[in-house]
Length: 81
Length: 149
Image (tube, rainbow over all chains, first blue to last red):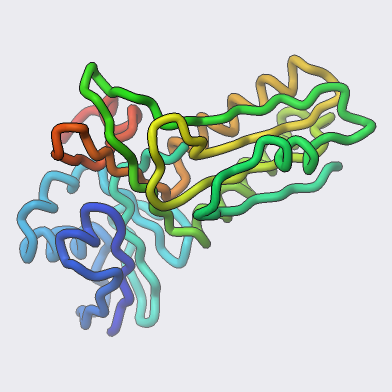
């Protein structure tokens, strides 16, 4: 299945792009995607405990599986305002 | 029931505009909160900040904040949240929140709830560029107080 991943802040800088499209096995969870990305860009490993996941613009738990065509946003610690 | 006006912009924010959008005959109080870029953090001089947001989800979060405010403080009138993006210099306004209510105590409480919740949940990030040339993404307070695993 294909997943579109939007990247912001430290994630965007680590990959030098705004989004990634990943081909992943069925049942892959948000947390597994984070670990996959941290495997490619080790500087992202430090966010594992605190990154949040926006799946189709809703906050979801780390163990939520993604489905084909989903849009996943990795949300490193926010600091707006 | 009041109206709502949310936006992101790369132009300077206007407190007059936020107030004009919020003021209403039924609102005996309009409380406004202006967040501005501080000259230093932890004693270290700040040169400027860069703000970015995932706008569609952040706007959804703003709408949710407004729903929660109306549930908790039913006499709420208009609600405005304007957030600036891009490069901001020290002293510039990054966010303006304005909340109208029939009564001032509820307007204060709702405005504080709005800025606190925005900082916790809205996908908006800022990068601090220090006067010494270094830079860091700002990590919110909620993260620092969560137990690490």
